Image (cartoon, rainbow, N blue to C red; front, side):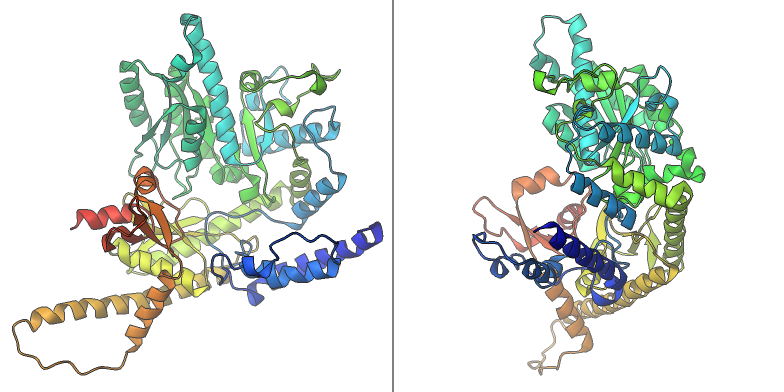
Length: 576
């Protein structure tokens, strides 16, 4: 492709993206209607030996790629959290790809490092982080950096905390092997914490205590202190705590003002994970939630979730960049340069050496919207979530299951978990909406998140109409099934002639459609994997049945087939 061809292809692609965004709501269903492996038979087994015309490649987007897309920008998409997207951000990535730099150090491309430092200070100030976290603070040790994800942020901070803890222990036990000291380190988080905390602990090879939160899904100081004291009695060393600042399952907030002083007392590294909700701290009315942030050693939030910036863009700040980087500094001769002592080199701030020019897109977004425009975007989502919450509370068949502070509403039909699993399976199977489930205090709940940039009250009303329509159908079907179960008891002992075949009713057909949707995909897992994961809150899609297999891969019995998160099967087994 030469320059003239690229000019034309680029214009065509921009037009395609614009048309996609403008017609998304009317031309496409939110989730794809494909089976696993759909693409294999549409694409050759071998890579082409000779170049193909760009027009042929472009035509394959609509025929082969779009059928398998889940449309995260669709106004009917209410799963997970927002996936940041905006035209300024897209243009930022386009320019970054165009200049094609690898910004691992100041010398490799000075502006890549310097713009990142400035933009992180901009955002840190807007969020309300203490001055100690900003690189612009005179004589300060803090600073911000962009990582690929919140998972990376938690991992690198746990690595830094681990290095600091071992260094401290070696002062008292200079002859001790690192491996011996490592075995004594313990990290802490809430059951509401993201699963990436557990993964980070595995990578760091440290123990992790997952602590039960209070009735509002918030980790409190008392529970943390109790667990720390028990570990001290066992000669273990508490060194790290991850506080959840807007959990994935219910957008709950750990009590920083209680956790922070305890971490300070025991010399622990406190990381605050605000991947979603941290963005909302640019709004003054939410800053009260930051009480206790002054005790934190590090903080992260993802503009690629709730600040209209495309993935990947996870922003992170540390109070002491020298302690933070000590665990990761590797300085071969070929990476050294004359300005080492004068600048920040982000190659020391994470696992990868190579780094993209991520700061461009965030710089474009902040300048294009202004903080005022970004605040209005977040406030609109919060207003719409409250509107949806009002619909749920006004319907006596439903209940709200979380404290709605941000753009997430957790709700369910009053009743058992199974009926809510059926509700979610039918909603997702319809293709009219996309939601996912969660588990809150043993209850299976549906998560409804306001996601689209330009979401409206009409979108909330449409979603609620779809949900209540499907709920009515499920309740009717459930009532019919219950009545059918009672009939043999009523007629037991009576002599009844063989039944005459009865044509299927509307309720029978609805039940068949629902079961067909549920069994359209099946997820099989080993019993070992199932047992290791039942302690975690699940974000299973709510559609796919999970089949627990024995060691030979056979189905053990029908009770091992269940829908939704892992807590369900426990409820069924306990109820036998």
